[in-house]
Length: 84
Image 1 (tube, rainbow, N blue to C red):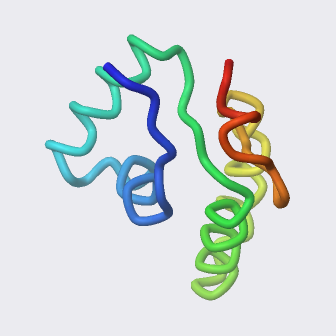
Image 2 (tube, rainbow, N blue to C red):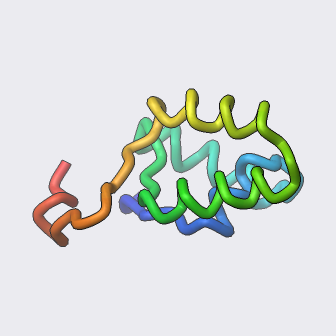
């Protein structure tokens, strides 16, 4: 299974755990890769969305759990950064 940069829609669905197909594929992907890869843009969009619905406790939880993902920062060079 090739590495993939997960966009906000997919990562958000994974966090919600509602869409069974997304959840199953996410678990399989993480079993192979060992982590998820997201961008700083995805972090910003998810935090903004959680603030909008006044879920401050979920914001803190989300930010704490970021240590378990590969986070591509703003300005990351492609493909140089993508050689893990």
